[in-house]
Image (cartoon, rainbow, N blue to C red):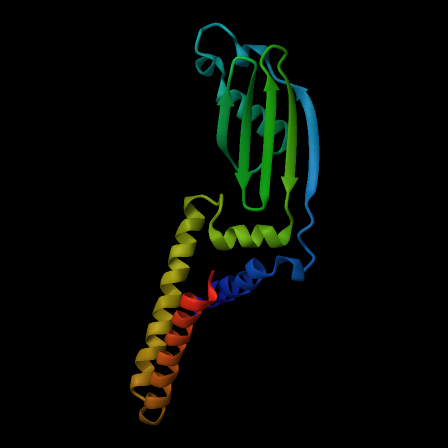
Length: 182
């Protein structure tokens, strides 16, 4: 029973991954913001524009100012502007900053509950702790399946039908893989 919640979660999200439109809960919410960051964070002093940008100060200022979630996954810097991207399950935020004026445009997209749980199912933009949850869940499901199979070996009248069912299930899965996937 230790893995019950994870088995239900990954079973349900398996369905939502295949059919996200069935649930009508995946409406995106867009938020756009504008503002200014300190020009000292964007200094244009050397030939290498990447070294002049205080990425951490900019990222933490925008995170605090707009309550951004997720982690910074991408930072791009050139002579004229820099951009930062935050990603999290069911969430994305992109900031583009003019290096000369310090003015920024921030676009935040929250994808809704179905994309959120689908990202959790896949481990997309979730971090190392959730990756551990997925690994432990997979191990619990594997143990559950194996112990069920081992228990089958001790029930004589269910042994042959159980083994036949297991073999048929594996063969059907393999045939679908061979002939049903383009």
